[in-house]
Image (tube, rainbow, N blue to C red; front, side):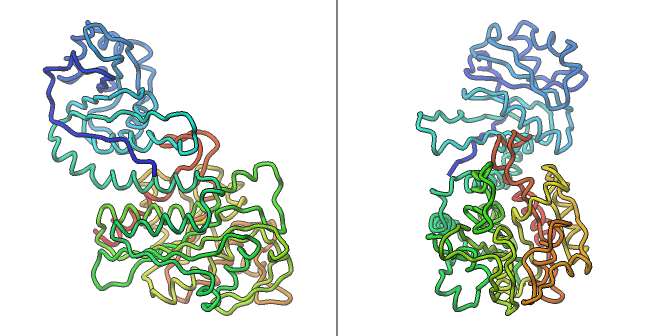
Length: 488
């Protein structure tokens, strides 16, 4: 697993600043004012810092931007990095500053002098998140970035505040690693094994194999994987950190590779379908974070792991399958497979755990990308309070989400001539009819939200907090949701 960069917090010691090797980062406010630590660096650099902050380039720089003074005079450091940031930044400003610092730094040791700046723990989180690299399949020797030392006021208190954020970063990295893995590595067996290994963190992990899924009547899920040599599975992860209350349930779609099945996808871009297990990846990363920070809540995470392949045994368009709930489904398009997986896992989660609420995540539809692009996940819900709490958490963590409509008119598009329902409703409102399909497997009075993360789980260009590829979207939002709703 990719591990976040080591970050150490220390009280301020400036005596050996001139001999510090690697890189030294300081903070200058938007008006160019320098704190004690930055002024010390300014003196060592023969006022190069003062000249920089008085320049037009610094004035035009955005808050959080980082500027470099290479090979400063009278210092052993290879560079001084100057961050433009208010003394009391917002959470978003602090995290973006940390991310920009991670993008700018070299692989050498980094010393960050924060002075009197607040939200230092958020700077450290932004730095850790953007420092990610996925190099498991690079044959050249990889040199990891050297540790970071943050010298700040009240270092012990800052380190305490940063500890749960380190757990968040590790959960995000776990999700990114899973989502970035190629399908010949992250098979259903391998995925399940990685989740089982989290038992060492205190999670209870069960793996339900195909024979048990057949006994449970999960015909909807099993039909998706019947064309693959990889066995379908359901993995259940429980974190019991609360009292006797019912758990909250998270359900993730884990299609380790999606060819579209008999309804084969176009060849161009199909290699990106290694990320079609992104929903299960988020659930896994969330459960890891909750366990690492010892969350005081009861949470269960369930993921359906399948591979959607064409073969002589694959499910066909026109086939009718029976779900665990007992409803029959006419499979019109085998590329609308994620909802078939989620249907059975959602029903199982409610039937077994009687949760206080359910959130499912899936890279479910291309239609949500047409509607919302890559800025927001689509949120569908039958419960205004639950939806509002998730949107509030997403806003607090800077992860975009937008609520989408639902209604009977959309549901009617799923009517089948020969079964209880079809698995698609046609091209119009494709992401909404997918959500309506899932809602049919939600029990009466069960608060439920569906998050379609197809547009945000993996990106073709770098984002603020992640390089190109998997983002880990959702781990921070859902961790915040649990903390604010069940631990506050």
